Image 1 (cartoon, rainbow, N blue to C red):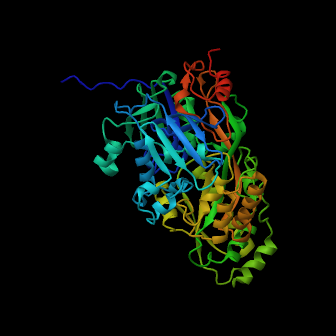
Image 2: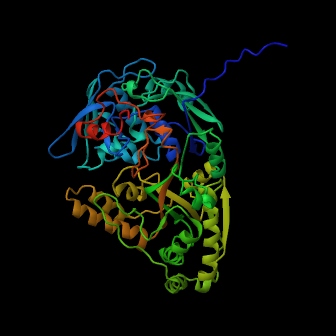
Length: 540
């Protein structure tokens, strides 16, 4: 018998249960939180979000200047930047990457994040064909000039988002859609892609050529795709996994017990669970029908009966506590008013109302909760409106494809804010947004969001955004908010360091490790942020 010559894979320093299997690791394609956690470890942008505050701090750009009218940003790249394969990273790489995001052929749901830049939306729509008229230009190899359409309070936050990360032009042009399979794969982040084995793991290996490699705390991190909350808990309890993070991996039936344990952490989280309508066909092309369903939904009952992690029922979409904004009051539970609206729409008592479906994705944890919510909605709407609802459970990847193709009647949905501003919730329902997925287009809503983001007076801006949100959740109601998430993850603080609670649940993998908190060896952030970070990122 021949002895096996297979080389054993070294163990990981840290193993994380991350949620669902990534649909992609292309930063300009991904739209889910679980994928973005990985892409941020591989590919970086001009800024990144601070591990403690989730505020933007210098990344590939070491500094920048902002013009007095706050419309022009001049970024200065670090002069020691190279891809993991050794080639230099320059501003030309950023210009190419951003143009790729704006190419409709890329099919980036987040291409709209670049529309705040002069000429970007016209470039996306093929109206602008002269690259020289785009608002982002390389002045030299290390200086990037970006001109916005108007002042934008959260532009530096956007620069930290995966869509605006720098990507390897040569490899993408050589390999096309299969560029992530190239080896070696050039990356710009703290980790290289060691392996991506479907339904097994993504292995991340420390990138020694990363500009801040001295502050990368772990050599190898394994990221496991797990859909079942019970499986995730078993992996953690048996020591296979060190960290479990994902809102859909909450073992609801055990929450009363788990919440009392010191290694289970619940916190305020910047996310909303809601359902959306396909407004392109009857009966939900009628706002009266949509409003009737909203007012026949007892959200307090749903939270009281089904969730157990501190979630809060809501009548508005933007979560409470967002910076510089007070959300409006939306539609309340009112069965009598709901029945009246449905009758006005031509369906008294549900008579002649077509059979409709509620679509949600299959899985455990939060996905299992979606099915339970569907059952409750089915019963509510039968009793309140006299309509019949079919429950349609489909595989997760098919689910998101069905949403994009408007292949549904009503669909379970959720959104977690990308930055601490109301715009991250409200701009997704602009008419051209790839994240809209309702077919709803409202010129007045579009104009209000546009006007709000031209406004430099924060109070006036907030009032304009409130008007827009009222259209979204009360007047037109293409969506119906149900509750705000409570964040939940579990890890032992005596064994794992580098995780700090913040509203966005942002935890860069660069700083994660077993043992004591990693000691930062160089000045990475701005002075004020560095002082705050130093207090927690030193040996103790």
